[in-house]
Amino acid sequence: MGDEGKIPVLILQKPLDREKSARHNLILTATDGGKPQKSATVNVTIIVSDVNDNTPVCDKQKYTVTVKENAPEGTFLLRVHASDSDEGLNGDIEYSLRNKFRNGASEVFDLDSLTGELKIKGGLNFEERQVYELKILAADRGAVSLSTHCNVVVNVEDVNDNRPEIDVTSVSSHIPEDAPPGTVVALMGVTDLDSGMNGKIVCALPKDIPFDLKPSPDGNFYSLVTKEYIDKESKSSYDIYNSQRFRNSVVNINKIHSRRCN
Image (cartoon, rainbow, N blue to C red; front, side, top):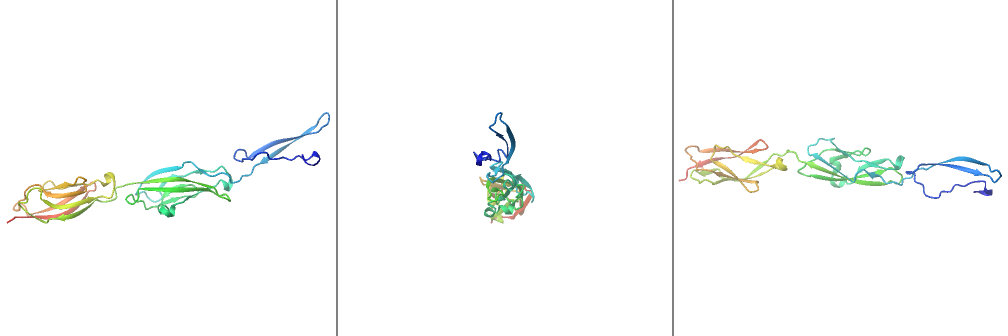
């Protein structure tokens, strides 16, 4: 009580938590000392104002998504979401890519600072990079901002966008007609930058010619060899093509002439 015991003073006994109870309704009762006693009551309402004492919380600590490398600009990937128990600016959340300048993510991805939507901006290339690991910061707009972060893993999926390449490292344009079967005519390497079945190469020759392809154990190199004796009088030259299935393209290896050995 205050002076002369007629002015009551309401004292806070423990800390308030607006997030648990934002409003307290009290009934103050005053009783006199007479006989019989008389009393009066008054309602006291206490509104607890917010302070920025809660850190944003992400729905997930790690988000994972897979996207094809040829995904067009504007392709939606996922939506990051964080919540904050505070109100007003203290509970408003903005999102940002924190490591965008270090790994070039800002050139590839676009993050909406208000909705948390992550989209493709452009420039995905599986052959250059297969995985992006992003850190997204979720910060409230309080006078003294509080923040948290979550991780986003973007897996880039390969598409068949590279043609096989043949590198002829050695070739003999003239061979004697009495060259024994198995004589090496040309050596070549074959590569495809794509992965999996997109990068699998099968080389083949027409069946009506006296030549064959012998692959190396790893399939990355081929030897063009004779599979029988060549008769110059029957045919003096061959146009040999190497077809690369899975890509429907044809590469001319060389014209090979047979000549009689004196």
